[in-house]
Amino acid sequence: MTMIRCISPVNGEVYAERPAMTLEMARQAVAHARQAQKGWARRPLEERVKLVLAGVARLNEMVDEVVPELAWQMGRPVRYGGEFKGFNERSNYVASIAADALTSIVVEESDRFERRIEREPHGVVFVIAPWNYPYMTAINTIAPALMAGNAVILKHASQTILVGERMVRAFIEAGVPADVFQNLFLDHDTTAALIAAKSFDFINFTGSVEGGRSIERAAAGTFTGLGLELGGKDPGYVMEDADLDAAVDTLMDGATYNSGQCCCGIERIYVHESLYDAFVEKSVAWVSNYKLGDPLDPETTLGPMANKRFAANVRHQIADAVSKGAKALIDPKLFPEDDGGAYLAPQILVDVDHSMEFMREETFGPAVGIMRVKSDAQAIELMNDSRYGLTASLWTKDAERAGRIGRELETGTVFMNRADYLDPALCWTGVKETGRGGSLSVLGFHNLTRPKSYHLKKATA
Image 1: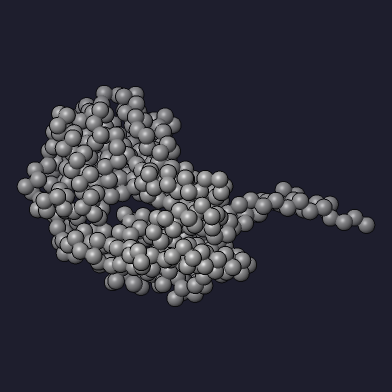
Image 2: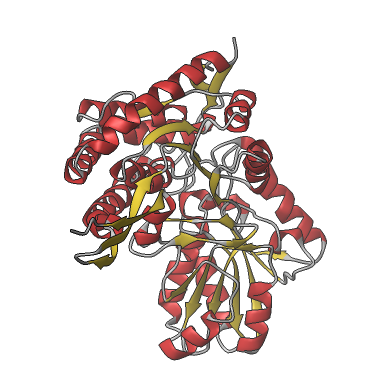
C-alpha cells in the first residue's frame, strides 16, 4: 500500500500520512460524484450558494485547529492566523456575483421565437491544489464550481495532506452532499490514469510548470478542459516618482512573506537609478528585522520553508549568482539557519543580471534581486525577459503612466502601488509558462461552465 506522507518542516518528521486510494476505489468515488452531480445542479442556485457559504462558515469555526496544522504542515507562523481573510473574501465575492455571472443571455423573446444562451455546469471538476496557500488557492475553484452546479473532487498536495480532508469535513457538516464534494488521496500514477480515462469534465491545477506539463500529457486526446496556474517570476518596477517607503514595505513583504512561497510573490525588482541606493538601503533594514524560527512560537515572523529540498534550491540559486558576481547584502549571522535544512534566512542580492538563474528561474523562497534601471523602456524590456507572466507591480504616482507601461507588459495582472494580492473581482490569470485559463470574477464562473444555446420556434395558430 502506497502511503502519502507530510514531512513537517518544523522538525523533519512525519506529521501526517494517509493511504493512497487504489485506481478502482478512485473510479468508484468519481462515479458517485457524477451520479450525485445532476441532483445537485437541479437545486436552486440560491440554495447551492447558501450551502457553500455555510461550509465556509463551518471551516472558520475550526480556526484553532487549522492554524497550528498549517504551521506543522508547511511552516507558516501561527502569528499570521491562517488564510481566513482571503478565503472568506473570495468565497463571499463569488457568492455575490453568482446569479449575474450565471444568468442567461436572452437574444430574443417574442411571440415567434425564444433564443437564449445558458450557462451549464461541466459536471465533475477535479481540483489539484498546492501547499503554499492550500485553502485560498483551492477555494478559488471549489466555491464557484459548487455554486455553478458541479461536483468537485479535490486532491491536495502531500505537504498539506490534511487540508482537503478538513475542507470537505466542514462543507459536509454544513449540508453539502458527501458525494458532491470529495477529498481523495491519490498518487501520481492513479491521478494520471483517471485523467487519461476522461474521468473529469474540467481540471484545475495549481503547481509547477512540470506538473502542468504532466497534466497536459495525461489529458492529451481527451479534450478535457484545463485551467493551469504554474510558475512565476514576478517583477516590481520602482519609478523615480514612487513613494519610496511604501514601495520598500510592500515589495519586501511581497518578496519574503510566507518564506517567499507565493505564486505572485515578488522575485525581481527594477529601481530607477535616482532611488536605487536609498531603496536598497531601506530594503536591507526592513528584511533584517525578521525573526526566523519555530512557526508555532507567536514571536516568530519568518518560518521554515515547506521542505528542505525547496530551501536547497534557493541556496543553490543564491550561491550560483554570487559565484557570477552578485553581492548578498543580508548577514546570515542575523538568522539561526539549520545547516541544509528547511530554515532559511532571507536574502537580498544586488549586482545581478539576467544571465543568472536567480533572475530568470522561479526561486519561490525569501530572496529577491534588485537591479538599477535608467528608463521605462529598459524596465519594460527586463520585466518581459521571462518565460513567466503572472503579475507585475508598478510604483508611481502617475496612473496614466502605469497604464501605458502595463499595456506593454506580458503578464496576467498589472498592479500599481501594491503587490502580492488576489482581487476576487478580477480574473486571476497568467501568460506564457505561467499557464492558461482564469479563476474568480465573472470569467471564473464562465470557465467552470459551458454555454448551451436554445433556439425555440413557437407554434403558430
